[in-house]
Image 1 (cartoon, rainbow, N blue to C red):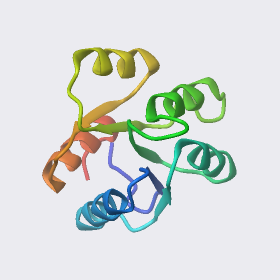
Image 2: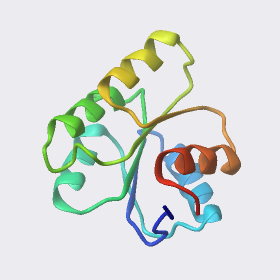
Image 3: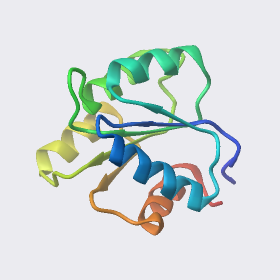
Length: 128
């Protein structure tokens, strides 16, 4: 299965710098249809208004965390199959377990490279 490089990707992070870093890495990998959300609530609205092929979300955000966003996505019948990759600076086992239990497709630890991000996307969606 090959990844559709024209699909819309939503990146969610409350730090503009991190949004820019992730966007730049995705562009390096060949993605160009990239949308951003500064928090989980905004992301959820965008996800319900548009079709996305992938969500890449930070874990630590306010007022809705990445984990809460993931749970909302998985609870929505229209969104529940959407590939979801969580990004975090924390490598706590309980966080990984909680994200897996909530239905995350993959997990990326900060800091990371374009190669690491590609590896995580390939593991979820297939090669590109």
